[in-house]
Length: 189
Image (cartoon, rainbow, N blue to C red; front, side):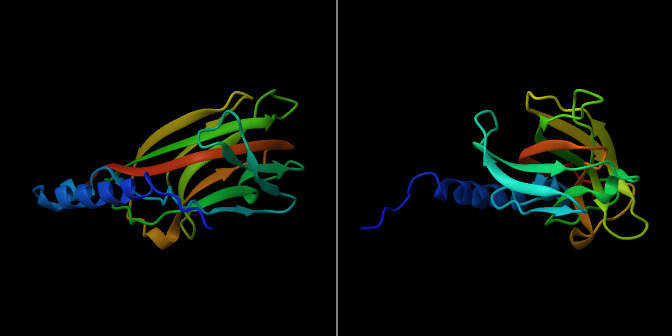
């Protein structure tokens, strides 16, 4: 006899349908695009790039949701971006859009020289000119927390050519990534 989960699974879909309907009823395309999620938080696909990275999904007593992506680097790269974690975005970004990133990060094993982790969080184009909406350096500790940043797009970014990226190649460290949300909080239109 199989057990079937019921209850809260249908709620996000119902709310999404209501919100889409309300968004369409608001005047103008900008109202429908404001506060739009640009990543799929229900099915996050974390990718890693670079040599010597080890990654796994591990349980976490402190992370929201109870599990994290844990990524370890073995050594420093001359260019920190050569070792990175990425998440694809599913929505186009237009010039003038205000984009917000909110991601939970923890240093499981910090850099010895700093006593913290060291990484750059970005919303970045994956092809030339490799421009970004923002790039912020953070120094996470062994106490995980949400980091939130906002930036204004200075150009158009197609969804198939832009990612959330975390450059982690600053040295030997283990970083945990929890829930991630990338949203358009206001539109240029």
